[in-house]
Image 1 (cartoon, rainbow, N blue to C red):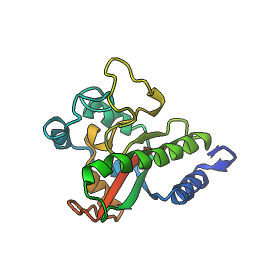
Image 2 (cartoon, rainbow, N blue to C red; image 1 turned 45 degrees about the horizontal axis):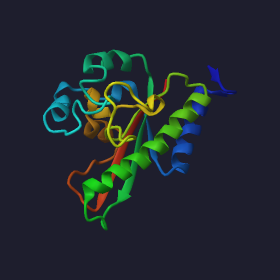
Image 3 (cartoon, rainbow, N blue to C red; image 1 turned 90 degrees about the horizontal axis):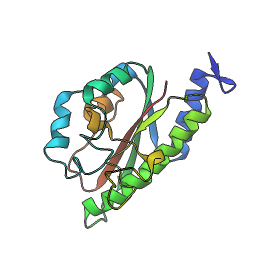
Image 4 (cartoon, rainbow, N blue to C red; image 1 turned 135 degrees about the vertical axis):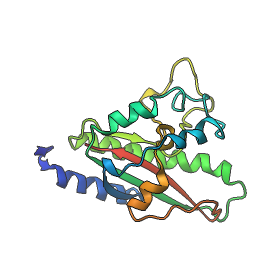
Length: 186
């Protein structure tokens, strides 16, 4: 099948190269490699300060069961990873907001490129909660074109997905912070 003058696999390779140019590591996976678990939602509902505070966070987004159905309509996904040296950061939580926003914009650029390459249903699950606005307007999103939810918000177990891609996810390492997104491609 051809899209945008190239066959699908050639277009996927172009996206992987574009990701690399943006400083992102892209791993091609099948949608069946994406581990979706109900228990992941516990971290959102009981432990995340953004729960219910953003339109891109639960309970303001699709449910885990709804996401499972959507995921079945995709074949290929790109796991997107960007590592950041945070050894010089005094306040890692403060730095995280800036880091995740910068990573998101790179990943969003890749989503737009995927659309231009013919993957018209490409959709990004962003690293961390949306932080485009200082405070989310819970009545109506003021940046709907940028509104994306995090993989964890729909139950994705990023540790298992990264293991499937051969990448180790380190927790509690203040020297290195990792931004992870998932681009649903086709």
